[in-house]
Image (cartoon, rainbow, N blue to C red):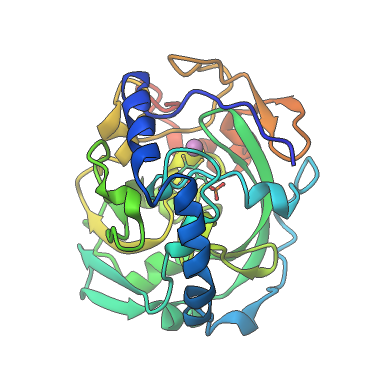
Length: 317
Ligand SMILES: Nc1nc2c(c(=O)[nH]1)N[C@H]1C(S)=C(S)[C@@H](COP(=O)(O)O)O[C@H]1N2
Ligand SMILES: [Mo]
């Protein structure tokens, strides 16, 4: 496999160097870490047998078509952002420390009744389907993959939010025993993201439980992760444990880290450069070809209306 050139990290440059040095010193995260992780893998993989495996492959929803080839699985699953396992892209081995069962998801805040649900009960309550989506990282790489999961609108319906709720805030697990990088001081753990209710119930917003016709792979954010294909990839929070319905706009992790570079909306727009690089084109992690980036990542017909009247906001960062 080709190793892509490293692009600018999403974290401020001033922090990137000390962080990567610190990471390399950690026994669990350096070369020794990969060995440790693979030793643990054989036992944890058995413990994580997926009780919903019979749901895969799910029927494909043909409505969502691609303008490019699917990215080979070996590229998509070996080039990831998952800072809980380090700031480099090759966290696939380390991410096997993630224990995806047992796993519970909490619904709280402005809901009829707060509840905590086991992941398997939740998945079985949802209409599972496969969708082919493009994904565009803010770092200007992209892929096109078959996700399995269910419409986020169905999850919102299940959670029964009050009409006063305006946003949904999502949180990743916090447990350094299965994500050693969560001991690092630079990051405001746990990872947080948020959407407006209109975004969360837009038909494109998708809760992912699987990829390539199989239950979710840990490095992609098993057992439950968000994808919003019209937004930069960092909105797609992985390994979610909590959905909080609120009338306050949530601050995502990247906005907390560097508000001058990353905002709440993060809609893809080739004409609005990141302060440190152009967003005009992207590199496909499968073919390594560059292609022009599309407004809303090509999904404008579904989502452009969501932002009418909000033009003065920083919609594209
Ligand atoms: N919890 C968590 N979720 C996360 C991230 C992360 O570091 N931690 N990285 C985000 C970023 S920057 C991107 S581009 C996508 C990458 O998804 P992939 O590895 O499945 O391609 O996950 C997003 N979700
Ligand atoms: Mo990203």
